[in-house]
Length: 292
Ligand SMILES: C[S@@+](CC[C@H](N)C(=O)[O-])C[C@H]1O[C@@H](n2cnc3c(N)ncnc32)[C@H](O)[C@@H]1O
Image 1 (cartoon, rainbow, N blue to C red):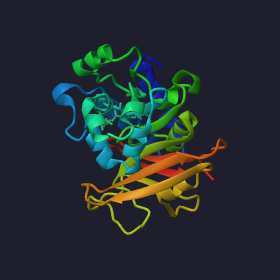
Image 2 (image 1 turned 60 degrees about the vertical axis):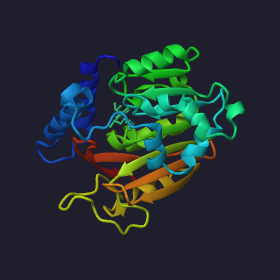
Image 3 (image 1 turned 30 degrees about the horizontal axis):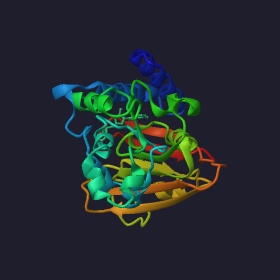
């Protein structure tokens, strides 16, 4: 769906459908929140909200994501592929193709050769002159930037398989359909491949933290069928055919939880979630409920 207008319409329809159970006006309110969110994606120049960070470096990725991410990236070889979902300007991918990366990852430098292929996905096209220059210098199709569609709008055949998938405050933090998002990620992940992501301001697996902003809920919540709280880490661990580690990074403001989801067999089944709350933001505030 390349037309952004059609994309927004689809979102509005999708949103209205998921919220038919809401009180009168609920779907209208949701449509307004989705329109606000769309405006954030489309924002340019001074209109880009302060909290909408689109230029994190590879170093920031390494600091935010679980420790294993850095090793996994260092182990990639020229035939391998790295997908960054919600890449913003794609700075992290650009930083990977620098001599500095090899200096910092000396081991395996020769085997790494011309490096893996890097694919960036973003709803809006935020490529810079740096991206175009680097793409022209590298071997053809070594880096790819796909825009105008959400992850769920690509088929597995179109994107192919990846050994490493990252998401730093991208689709995993912004999607209205978290279970479909995970389904898609795991379908694109090669066996033994790793998905590395992060969420800000969530109840961590230890369960001892409180929402960062007084009077506000956690940014992402999941309720069980009986309404009881399900931690995001526990929900990820309930997916079949994956091994999950959750790492709390309490020194971040707001604190973050970093997740490493490793695909260990093919019969992946993601417990379905329905969306029950969405408030636009950077990232949005989202509530989900286990479907059964
Ligand atoms: C806050 S920016 C983060 C950019 C980058 N990861 C960084 O840290 O600098 C959010 C990015 O996620 C993208 N995004 C949000 N939802 C998405 C989805 N469902 N599929 C693909 N990209 C998505 C946006 O288009 C944008 O590129």
